Structures are given as structure tokens and as C-alpha cells.
Amino acid sequence: MGKWKIAGINFDHFHMGDNLRMAHEHPDVEIVGLCDREPDRMAEAVHNFGISKDCLFTDYERCLEATEPDIVLLCPATAQHAEWTEKVAPSGAHILMEKPFAATLAEADRMLVAMEPTGKMLAINWPLAWYPPHRTTKRLIDEGKIGDVIEVHFYDGNRGPLWHAADKIEKTAEDVQQEKPHSWFYKQAEGGGSLLDYLGYGTTLGTWFLGGRSPLEVTATVDEPAGLEVDEHSVIVARYDTGLSKFETRWGTFTDPWTHQPQPKCGFIVVGSEGTISSYDYESTIRMQTRSTPEGAVLPVDVLSCPDQNPVQYMIDCLQREVPIEGPLSVEISRIGQQIVDTAVLSAREKRTVSLVT
Image 1: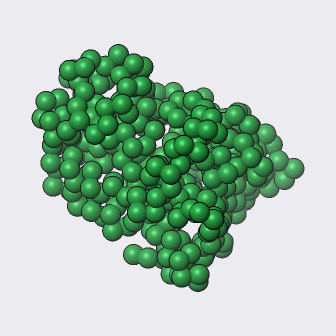
Image 2 (image 1 turned 90 degrees about the vertical axis):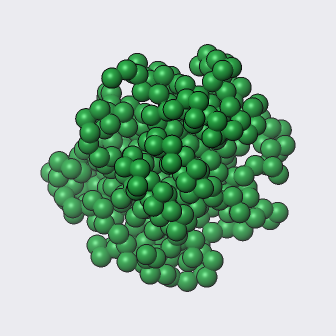
């Protein structure tokens, strides 16, 4: 067949610029349309990728009708993921939704219902899933290097979502202060807060590392910053039949992990029955302990190649080979991650331990 036609719709999340770059760099992709209610939000992508004015829309229905995309990249505010999936699904396009899955489990299930009659793929992109340390960790787990995974410990975040734009372009403190009162990231009704922004990363990749297992119960607490309606720090403990795992989210790290790893470091520590692995974001090595090397060994991360470098490569490869989406981008693994997130939200609100919501 010819090139895969991709449209990018809704630029609420600045990751749209990153995902469009992946599409632009793929040799088998043509970007056929961009759509957002605010044309200015598309300007950077238009410049970066040489998009024709004929391919720009402010009406999503007109965009879908005119471009007939094979795949739609969606980056709406978290609380609008279900709504936008329901809007796009009838077009018959496959959908790549930027993380998280949704604001609630009920909304995630609405997305599944919307996609079911179309027979098309829905994938949830978790950027951490493409980091070489974490891919290397999963390979070593699958090879049985640390036995059965019994615990996952996650700490992640950044200085805050307004400190950077697409391609990790840094903003100034003045930019942040001006944008903060207007950003959906800081509005509770739109799915803002560090817990909803980052917890799904840990619970979804954690579920991947744990082989698809679910916890029995969750205990969560969040901070309550003065003058804000959302959290900037959350700590979640999940009890599995194998023990306790911890997931911590933070807006306000001392440094951004892609420039200088803060302390605590951002990433994962995975504990198995026969060893452990520390897997930190952006780092070129991981550290693994085993029974034969209890002192630990520092190992280079895998060099990733197409189609395992980014979500656009991966989704197109699955479509070409007619195989299902697997791993953290799959709705099966992402739904378990969303269950833990929902349970954490309930636990934090009621200030008690809660059984896993279904």
C-alpha cells in the first residue's frame, strides 16, 4: 500500500509536537491534516514539518472528512479522552491517544465501547515505554534474569508541565507564571494534577513488569498546595499478593530528569525473587543484582531500532503485520493501570485504604 495517512487532532497536550515529529520522520507516513480550535497552537508544527495551509482545520469533522486519515493522533486534556475518542471513532481511523488512558476508569471504558464496532486499533502512548533503560529492564525480566517480579518502585515527574514545550524546549519562570492560571494541567475538572499526569506511567509500566498482575488494594495520599485545586505530589502504596509496591508522582523536582537527574532519581526499581534492577529515565546503563552477582553489575542499555523506538513506528508495524497492540500501549495493560489510578484517587479523597476498583 501507499503511505499511511496521519492527522493530528487537538493540541491540548504539548506532546502532540513530539508525536507529529515521529510521524514526520517515518518514511511510510504522510501528515495529511492538523486540527485544533485555536490555530495558533498548530503554528509550531506547521513550521517544523512544512504543513500546507490546505491541511489545517479548526473543525475536526471537516478535517476527518477532507483528509480520510488512516491513523489519528489525539492529545486532548485528560478529562476529554473519552469524548474525543467518541468523536473520532466513527471515521474509521485507528487512534493513538497520548497518555494517560483517561481521567477515570469509566471514561476509559467509554473509549473501548466507542472503538469496538469499528474494528480499529486504539493504542495509549506512554513515552516512558520507549526509554531504552525500561525496554532493557523488560527484556531482562522476560529472560528470567531476576526471577518472578514481586515489587515495583516508581518515582517520576519533573519541575512541572509548564516548564517545557514540545521537544523539551525550556520555558522561563515568567512563562510558567503567566500560563499557570489558564492551563488545563492545573484545573481539576479537566484532569489536572501530578497524580493523573504521572501515576499512569508507573502503574501501567509497573503492570507490564509484573506480567499483567493487579493489586488487591491501594493506599494513597496527596499534597494540598495553597492556591491550587490539584496536587503536585502523590505517594501510592499498592498491595499485591506478592507484597507492596510504591508509586510516587512529583511536579516540582529540583531539576528535570532529561537535563540532570534529580534526587530521588526518576525511574523504576524492580525487585524479583532472584534479583533486582534499577532502571532510571534517560540513563545509558541499568544496574542489576542477581544471586551470582549480589554486589550488582552495571549494564549498558539496549540500542533500540525500528519499530521499537516510538509509538508511531510500533503502531504502523502492528498494522502492517496485522498483529494486536501489546505491552503498555495495549488497552488491556493500560486499563489495569487506570484501575490503580482510580483506586488511588478514591483512597486519597477518602483518606483510607481501598480495594481495587473494577
